Image (cartoon, one colour):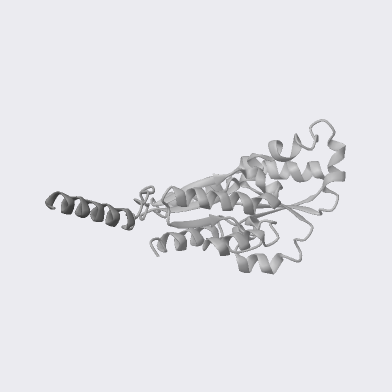
Length: 234
């Protein structure tokens, strides 16, 4: 009797164990968060300027990740590239992210990505408007429809971005074909550098265009980065 009772108790215990709920699976631990850092995902054309602003304004907690500057010439790829960069940043633990792009020819596609991701960007249609400042750009936008903008970056990279890819070093006569719709070169200078201004002037002469220089410094870029830095942890 006693042995049979022990067997019944063992079977009952086994049935209870078999029907008991399984313990919840252990949650995988992700990468440590970066609560004290603000990641700026920016166009490579702005890299030098963002680093200068970070140093000047003491924004040591800003971390810069640049996407290839060549996307400037492939704006249809910007939204997807930024989307992937945000996903990668979140996987690395970044909570505070700011995008150092304006619309930049994405046709609103970048804004759709950022609305879904809950991330803000530089205001304005393109970096040339950012450098001039929103109000200043609005005042000249109509007159600048036929302007070919250059910046410090584009002066440094004029040969690599324009002359050699377009074959102008071998066939300078093609300049009129590529730039025939422009009437002037407008150099938006971030710094006072005679060597860069010489590049801009020479570019205007080679393209057969009028020349204008505007010392914009960093325009709306600096206050936008400052504001992004102050929103960390929000």
